[in-house]
Structures are given as C-alpha cells and as structure tokens.
Length: 198
Image (tube, rainbow, N blue to C red):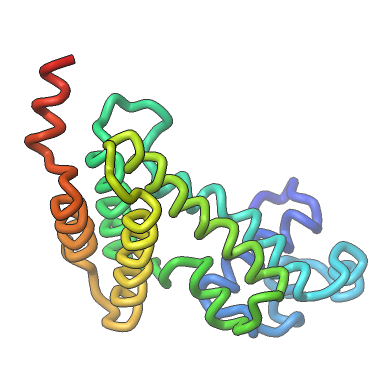
C-alpha cells in the first residue's frame, strides 16, 4: 500500500484485500488498523460499513475483470476469447491466493439482494455474462442469452469448486465451457474454416 495514498484509498485497499480473504464480516477495528485509519475517520469517509463494502468491491471489480478478460481486439475468434476467461480463471485458482469470485463470495455472505454490496456484485457478474453474450452473438449462436448464462454458471461453479476443494481446477472449467460451445456449434474447426473464407 502506497504511503502517498489518502485515508480513503488506504481504507478501500485494505477492505478489498481483507473482505476478499477473510469475508465481509471482519470487524471495523481490524479494517481501520490494517488501513492505518481511525474509526472516526472511516465514518467521516463512509456513511457505514455497508457503504465501504460496496465501494471496495466496486474498486476491485475492474482489475479482477481485467485479469480475466482478453484484450479489446486481440484478433482471436469468439470461441478463443471466451475460453481465455476460463484459462485465466484456471491460472488464478492455481495461484494459492484464490478465494473464489469476489462478487459471488460477497453476495453469498451478505444474503441480502438489496444490500449495496450485493447490487455491485450483481452489476459485475452481469458484465461477465454480457461479455460472453457479445462474443456468442459474434459467433452466430442461436440463443446467445441462454448460453451466456450457462457459461457464467460454469465460471461460478468452477470458482466454488476451487475454493471448496482447496485445489487447482486443472482445466475442468475450460473443458466444461468448451463442451458447451461445441454443443452450440461454436467449434474450433468451423471458426478456422470461416476465417479462411474471409
């Protein structure tokens, strides 16, 4: 954590790390101690711990997404771009610092769909589904909405498996996503043939 960071930034950084590793029920005292900020300052910067949960999740969300998604236009096929997400998830799960999808973890812990943290979590999970959907539309899939939800469920299930079993995924998420894509006709051979025709 940078010494130049403001108290607000230090709180968001500490909260992002502690909530992900230890859960959102960690006490305010531990949060403030980790951030080097007084409780009084925390409550001047954030109206409540609930607001801090939501804002810290919103602040880590973009970097988590960036760690999973391919570049904007890397020349890959839609199938390759979708499978990259699962390949990156596989690497994250094998890193030893993986505690599941932060959005799912937060929403499951909070158990309240109206909690501001749950709203942020839902927003980011929808962005992943939307990414899958746009790639599936580009691939010409008949029902991109359904398949995008199925792929999101594979992603979330793989994350949960990695945490519950405390072991690497060893390609199970990639293989499951590939099987769904195969069943929908988004096969590697067909895409390679399309590329040759253009």
